[in-house]
Image (spheres, rainbow, N blue to C red):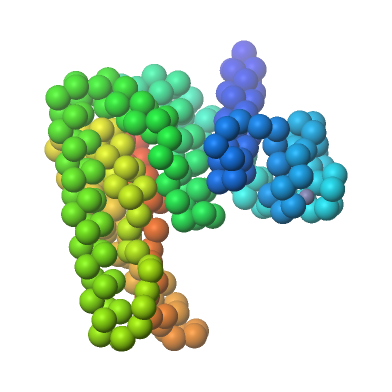
Length: 252
Ligand SMILES: [Zn+2]
């Protein structure tokens, strides 16, 4: 019996992984749901070709990106893991929907440097926050998350302007996007108040650690680039996932 349940959960995971891949392929180019398109040439794909082996484009012959496989394998592993290690207060459906959304945010941020401002994040954050913390702490958490990130957003604009003034060169780079502000609001809803304080703190720690590694890596290879923006979306999401699902690690 247990093996059947495991297989069913794995199938749920596979479907979720496919959905994340589909949305990450479609949404940067279209704002509505259409037939799947090739990431390389944009040609519409037959569903079977897109979702089942061998998945080469019928037009240009390009295989799908390795991200597709990684997302699907991770989605299955996480689904099975979550089923056997359930969150103590969140039903499987909500917990897994949230993790799938997190996966989508990470893929979008790493491939397109943007956080999709769709309503799904707000809805998930709002409902799960309300289930975990009640509406008031959820609302305060959301406002705190978005508020702090908005301040950082303006601070980032100021710093970049100053840097380009000193270097006497024009720049249109931004340190943070408004998508990060939106995402920090979603994470604030999820973690509630005062959980969002821990969330932002952990985000900065993770982001700082990875930035440091990147800077050291670049110094060892090609030299430090003048201005390298670190995408904060993945760190926000990873911090929130750690605080929600591995709370024991943080209670000393
Ligand atoms: Zn193609």
